[in-house]
Length: 636
Image (cartoon, rainbow, N blue to C red; front, side):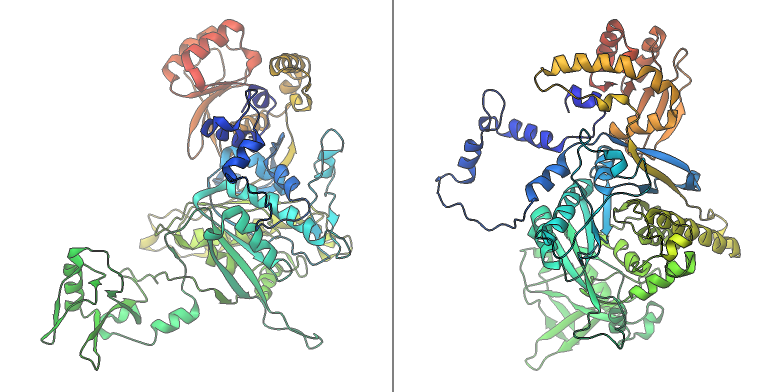
């Protein structure tokens, strides 16, 4: 990121980043002026310079612009709303953010890039009635912040009517830019689940193939989402939806909670010796492939018969021998004299926990009616239409990826709706003592004045998101209070959770309104920006909430917003704070000048990042700090 971009408090410019990486890897593709030469790039793609231009690709009107929208930086920030937050002292990274989701994800990018374990989204289906988010705003031409609901409640959205010539394109553009950013936020072993119906299923799959790669498709879940249809329904009855699942990178293995039909398979066979472990299924122990591992090529004896493997065994000899002694192997002699050798796999493990299994692609429930009842029970009848049932979300959240069970991951839902994802995460944490974190993003879309939601006091959809999960926490706390403590629970802390509410807002720093002059050099624009900051910012920063300034500075310098902040007593003249998130730490000082004593006191912290205002440094102090800290000095 250039000095000018950093000083303008922008989030990362992904287009610039990609070009810079390309220039490092392939400098020959660039001109002497440092510009990418398209002709040189074409020679790599098509070395024979074939004139044929047709190739297989998925294109639609506006795709290129949607990609640019995804990768352009943001000058927005997140502002903490203490009044709406619930048990913030127990939030531990849980957040509900009111704001347009594309811009919000850009704001999260610096601190949460490649940090998200799992994303689940239930985007608006393209039915001709649902809204489609509009990404066509320009801060210099439109009242951008009013547009996304910062100045006024609600947002302007475009209705995507079937009569529109760009009916599918509008929806695809909305999804494409958001999914491009979603991939940036996912961990290398992260996964994304996307609910969709038949209207855009085939298009969405092509978009995801484009973004994640066809080889990263884990599968498509066909989900029977309702019991049936009413008597007046005409024609074909649709009682299903789909959930697309992609990984960021290839997964070695994926396991899930066993479905009812899978548990039923275990119940068909019982073993008296291991009755406490439930029924069992069997799995073959002779492999059909050959890895040339000598320790897997041996013979076993059963009823006086010598049994060689077909090619080799799955297990080493000591493990198989012990399993035979424990009656955990099933032998079956075939008519040709050969043996089938299979291992018993019990429903429960040695600790009495039901084991995981392979996900099945056809899900028979839970039904949408259950989701409707869950919301109605918490906040009233007819408040929110078609919420996903929490059981469905729990199923996906509980997936084990690459044989690693992780109860501490971050789960993102940027089409939060009624907030089912947070509900599922909190209940799972209570059940298994996990510390999963959720981040929900919901646009503050106005509710219809004639709706039951509006009459009940929910003026925006995001009000419903927040209130539902507030009541979930209240319900969980009541359940916890009713529990009778046992000797086993003496060492356990009572379950506590909460969340913080943030709003997408314009930056706290007036400098974001500075427009660089394209006719001037970067050095000339930096000088003009410094003057602009001197004129506009000093008094303003002294008047606004210090926490909001800290949040923005920390977030845009690559820290997660659930940081801890503690004043360091070693500094005598300046207020210096130590900031820590789940991954890194730094020191920060927001004073208007840095004292000479602070320079000396920083010597014992020279291995840490130090963030301060550039206007707080005179030329000598800046040189000395740069000499002491090198790249660890961040002056903005």
